[in-house]
Image (tube, rainbow, N blue to C red; front, side, top):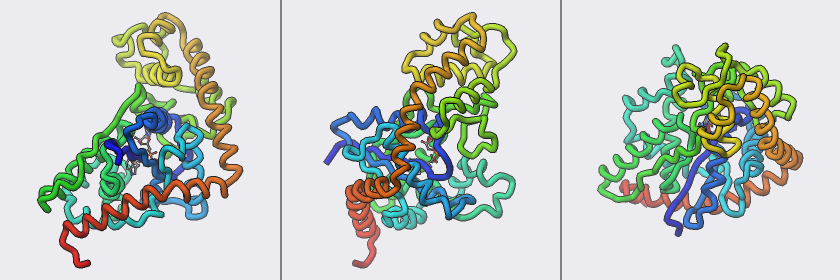
Length: 336
Ligand code: AMP
Ligand code: TRP
């Protein structure tokens, strides 16, 4: 058994963005070289149905996320790639954990507040309980490391609390404390149209994000149109980024894609104009993302091939999950 169990996931709610790639996927790939770790990457389809969605496209969106994982570099031979809804243990553990999750804590989740908006009274129970399902996703594998973007930190905190509550209430050292792994330079990639807003799949403006399915021309056009500011010169140090969120975002994306430090970026652009930054960013974005987009398209051309990978790759996950739930039932005193 590996010492580290790494688990993460993304929702098949729309095309993945550069934010998903830099904040999560790229890090998953660098973690898979750790020989001492077992990696599990799921497609969180049960989470995707907590908000309006189209049942006709869900299955294909699920395949597209699998294709993005593989195209982005997750190796199905080294990591288990699977679909959440295919493993009933997630839902069962969620129910068990819901009995030890406080409503007051769920009400404080910023993602719930954002997604429910003004109409929280009419939000579905699934949207409210979303973080409990996420805790179950993690704890059902007794995962020790969870690589995610900055926005998932609060959900991870709650998972840690739920794990402790279980262990205390049943006097069992059963669930380990899952560590959030928020790594890399771009833990929060911002919208190309507003440097104070997160780049998101659900932003109504497609110009606000780069999708992993965008071709080179689209990427170039979106970067060209990206919001900047009126200052004539680009900054050469951290202080110079003060009050310039859009430039900070473009610098951050550039550093992350190119694999260089912010100091290198400062040295490269100090005193230059926005066009220089946009030109260089387009070049590195296209160079880095085109092979991924191409590989995704190749994989998507053979849906049966993706289905086969998902089926083969999920056995390991299903086995671990089932064992955990059996043990959790036993600890909680159920018959059987
Ligand atoms: P989601 O798209 O909500 O399923 O998110 C999947 C993963 O991508 C999670 O680990 C998020 O934290 C991460 N992520 C999503 N958007 C961004 C962003 N704009 N910047 C960094 N990470 C992100
Ligand atoms: N809620 C996560 C997101 O939107 C996706 C997710 C579901 C997840 N279950 C998880 C991430 C378990 C990490 C671990 O980003």
